[in-house]
Length: 125
Image (cartoon, rainbow, N blue to C red; front, side):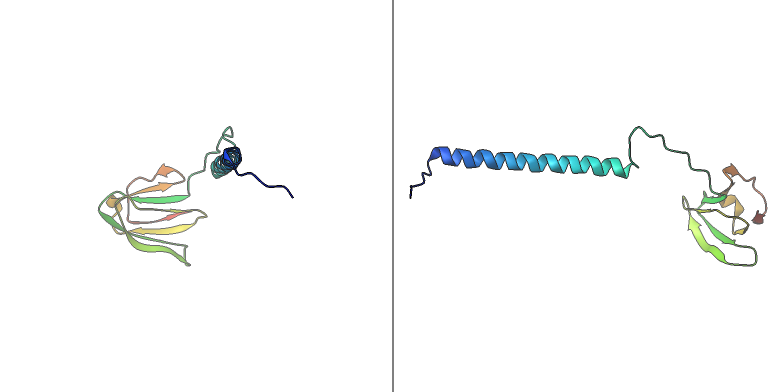
């Protein structure tokens, strides 16, 4: 049986193999990250996103706070809480009975259009 030499050439050969393996792993990680980013965007960067239609009813609090009560007529309560500045709620599938504690503290949108200020209770059909 022959003797194996472990000289400088063998060490250089092992080092080169390790560098190739690490390079392949880094490349695989970068490709996986790029694929993940592309899928997270919804597939292809060239696809045009479809606009989302506005909710049937959106209420955004613009004052300090506003009690917001929304329910199905004669049925389930969808929200009954005090919201603060910047908070909002969105609903689809009318009809809705709406009661606002302070109508001047909230902006109400019906099908994307601002609802004129008015009574604190109203129905969206």
